[in-house]
Length: 193
Image (cartoon, rainbow, N blue to C red; front, side):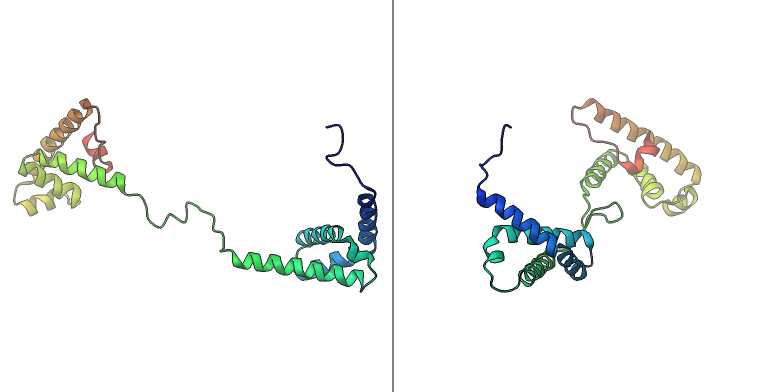
């Protein structure tokens, strides 16, 4: 860019000189006052800067001879701090998302699809095979416990579970041939594969 965006007027250069002299004379007191009110030097520096910008925009107040310049500057700084405090109090507290705080409602659609797929595959099995898998994998019983529950020998439970899992594998392989195949449910991936 060749030059400034707007031509500089004589008033603009006098305002800059005025603000410089105001800062030199009152800057330290203004910074100390803002630091005491905010408790934070960086925030206080921002407040001083905003105060000087407002003084530059209303430079006629600084030269009209009415009242104290330092008093006006301190009042403007206090008002800026009060406005910031009120704005911060009006906003809800921001909470950062993290893995430690999961969302209120988790997406359970994958679990529903998996359950429907398994139920559909179990419906294709014989009732004896379905009962054995239900006892072993859904009720998490041992072979002996499943045998007692079903009233059959433990060897029969092992044999039926072997053939039931083999039939499930076939059911899932058939599903692989279709264009939109359901995925194997997470609970049976290790068992069926």
